[in-house]
Image (cartoon, rainbow, N blue to C red; front, side, top):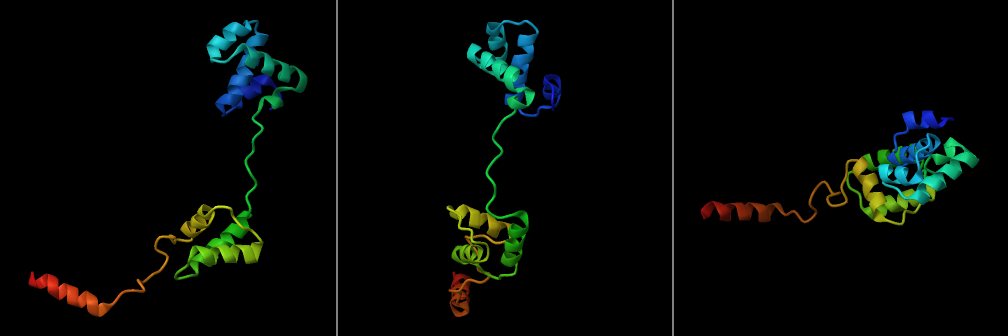
Length: 149
């Protein structure tokens, strides 16, 4: 996207569009005060983006933020999910240890491990297939008690 017109036509982000429109309107002879009222921005905003456009071009009107690079690549993440799917039960600590040992990655938040477990079809709330405290005799006793009442 080299020109201002191309950017206006193809931009999907409203912030980029507002920047480009403020420059375009200035080129059309509209006063900064009017542009500010129309786009709901300050006069300083209009002059800032006009100056940037004049010195650096239309590409500089784009947003600079591209997000943070993920710790695991897509292939590594897929391998961890495959590993999770191969387990019948799993604790968060186990997945944390596996990811650290295999890829040298330690997440700051447990939420990242929860997401990996969810992708693998598990929940950190109920990662065991069977209740380890389940006692069949107690269950039958309780059923009989309920039948009597």
